[in-house]
Image (cartoon, rainbow, N blue to C red; front, side):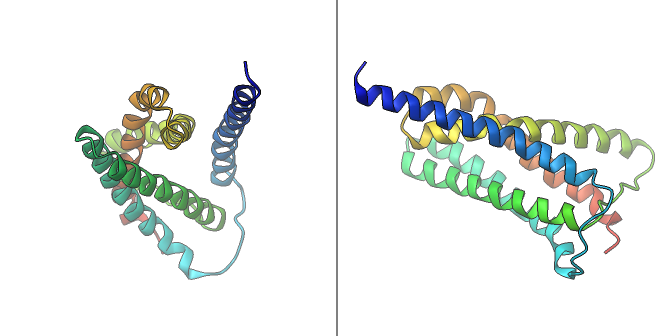
Length: 184
């Protein structure tokens, strides 16, 4: 091996460590915030707008993911990269917004009764589990795509894309189902 290939291998190992660390720490931070007994009291009404903004961002991210799929299927790599970068950026902004909201406001409780609960809770649970697992393959796929490692990118995207799309769409559906029960 040459010095250059050893350096590239070392850099890739460092990036894997970062991706793994972020993929573990973010779900833990979110879980802590969700189950935190007392919220930070910032007394700002604007935080109550964040769930609505998050739903809009998730909707737009879903559109960007589908456009990214369309572009890559039609050989428009530059457009694919742009739409996936927008989806990735929206995901990052969403995560920051989600953390701000859940660290400052109490979560709304679903008030639906009857059969709708049998729809809502499995959807919510699958959304939460897949959102927690999705970060690692999304980060890995984005890294591979942006660094030109297309074979690795395609093998990860096979799993990352459907999970990411499901999480963005199910997040919007969960929001629409619980939004009538927000108290603010």
